[in-house]
Length: 353
Ligand code: NAP
Ligand code: ZN
Ligand code: ZN
Image (cartoon, rainbow, N blue to C red; front, side, top):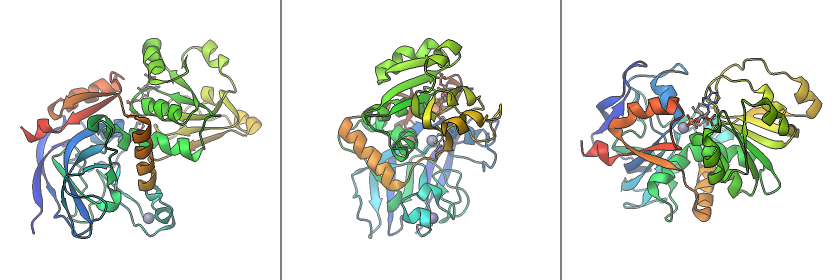
């Protein structure tokens, strides 16, 4: 059997706009699921990858790891889903499945390296994995998720990255109804962090740079908004939070937020990758047993747990649907924080092209 060719949108270099192209998808193996992609969310990581912000992007790069679609083919050993079911794929499409991380359902920390949905090493047909800005994807069933039937499909897509990336630290640091949580940055991840922390029963505060998103944050369920550029407001929440989820994508001063952690509190970085500047002052950390941590997406079982929780509590993302052809403009708007609060591509726009 031959690999199939499908339409996709790709970046051909860091400084080039994304444009339509064709890519190959592998033959459906006996434990594989073929998904006709209906919607794909637009994550800030897509932009970082397309523009090689982190280094290591292999071109052409087809981003997209918030995928929701319909099953169109299954291998003869597949039991999880059948043709016609709705299915979802997040940031992972493979891992070794034998190392200690994989055996603990922590595929994202696979000691032998997970395979990312895009810009990973394609073990099947060689080259690089291509993401959800495409018509179809073929994924091993272990890495395919079930979509709760009551949720809006397009608004479910962002749960596959923005949702799980904030859910995993909330669960790891045992957030519940007695917790005080703060979220830094109201974007894709930030708005999901508010909804999920509220869903878990926590009291939630948003740190945002300006007052422009204040009303939205309260509408999303935040109990309070603190403007991070206002020293007086920052002082007013000194020593308060058990967990802070920091979603800021670019270098920023973390020290003022450490002051707002409670004794034994933890600030979890999920956005910025790299060295911190100004340097982290350990004095308040030592004097208050405070931690600064990091967290990467979530494992497959935890992603299904998050989707099921969202199904039960009717939690989805706030989205603006765009056409595939509008992706370059969407990236520019994302850089200006002009998105409420996640772009989702309607893949019919690519198929009908
Ligand atoms: P996004 O929608 O662009 O949101 C980021 C938010 O951060 C903005 O809305 C803004 O909120 C704030 N912000 C932006 N630039 C800032 C700056 N220079 N200083 C301070 N605040 C700033 O991005 P996203 O999709 O949520 O992704 C956030 C980051 O997480 C990205 O770097 C992405 O690559 C990363 N990510 C990590 C993981 C993981 O597994 N760890 C998974 C997915 C994404 P305000 O306007 O409210 O201040
Ligand atoms: Zn992402
Ligand atoms: Zn592994």
